[in-house]
Length: 150
Figure: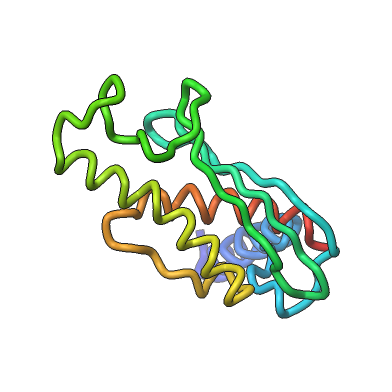
């Protein structure tokens, strides 16, 4: 193949790739203060983690402002993680395991408060020891914001 032929083929591949990617949905702006969101209450759910748990977020938006966020993690068996998360049969078997589990369980409230304060999912910082909760939170919020985008 000639150099000109190879160049034309490469150009065709690149333009074809641009045409395909140009058809994809644009990503949602994760900063509510930037506008472009409908007022209302929206529910979102994250993808399941390795254990089958999902994050669920209910977000209320009014006037380009996040006014409330309710976030919970639902385990694969349907139970919501709370004060008993990390216990075995209602008992704390290992203080360290329970402590770590509770860091993650409490982080959801901190993430929700940060989103209400900043109106920007990108400004919500991950908490050390709660990265799984962070992934579930951001996934659920992104799903809710996708529904709220105009």
